[in-house]
Every structure is written in structure tokens, then in C-alpha cells.
Length: 120
Image: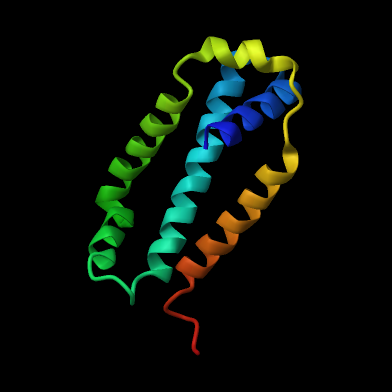
């Protein structure tokens, strides 16, 4: 996950040119993708495991704030030595894995959102 955030930081740095905004954009972007992936995976596992339904409560209205805060804290914790991001600035970011992860996250989120409406 740290590699994804680092690559997102490098891409945001190329686009914006501002280090602080690049950190904020990359952390927010990967947090949204992680939450969408977890939401979709929980819907996929809903029939297989017993506690998954209880975990889906974390994505309902009053508890979603806690989930978002935890994901933001976790992604920020992954990048804690921000100086290492600036040192590795010269390495080229890998865009393809980030695009693939984005597509997979969107597909999982759409599946989770329309889970009840899909008829097999």
C-alpha cells in the first residue's frame, strides 16, 4: 500500500507542484479507494462469514465517520517519514498498478452498492 501512496504522491506532485497538497491528495485518494475496496469485499464475503454483516455496520451513516478517520490515520501512518517521499522524488511513478487498483476498487464499490439489486 505504501508503494501506491508513494506513486500517487509523485503523480500529484507532477500535476500540482506543491508538496503539501500532493501529500493530502494522495492520502485522500488512496483512502477513498481502500474504503471502496473494503466495502465491496465485505459484500462479497457476506454469505461466507458470520461477522461480515456486523462489519458492514461500519459503512452505515453514523459509523462511516469512524471508518473514514481510521483509514486516513492508517494511510498517514504509512507515510510518516515524509522526508523519504522527497528523497525518492526522482524515481518514476508506476501509473499502471494505480490505474488497475482504481478500476478494481470502482468495480467492487459498484458491486457492493448494487448488491441487493442484482438477481442471479
